Image (cartoon, rainbow, N blue to C red; front, side, top):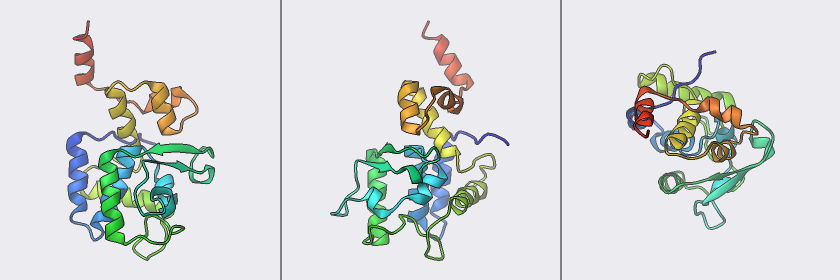
Length: 188
């Protein structure tokens, strides 16, 4: 199976712009940004509940905990929310009028929760429709890890953010390109 592509800044912007043409603009943008800003898997995004993201006052949490049932590795982990994502999640709450804390964070077109598979399909539909044929639901995760690595975040921190038990798994997510190689040799 081919590895999901890591998205460039232009490709991320293209996908987000494409969301403006979709029926559920705010929902779809929020899902994409969750993937790109947290590195969550499609399964983990589909499993999110309102109470995971918003506190009792309806405000976005600065971090939240994924339960073992919500993760691939069946181990809990803390997910941190940056300012840009916090703003998007605030906008999402206003758009959706969130009230029920046990409800799924994202509802499908039919009003139910997304399964892991339908969440993967949503990503594929968005990426393919805007011409990113090598992108998949895992592209946001790869992009998140690669971008942080490029900014000098250590692999141990990356492994913790990704929920990997081994840094060798995390290292496989980090893409290297010619521009990075050229910049690296300039450090000598």
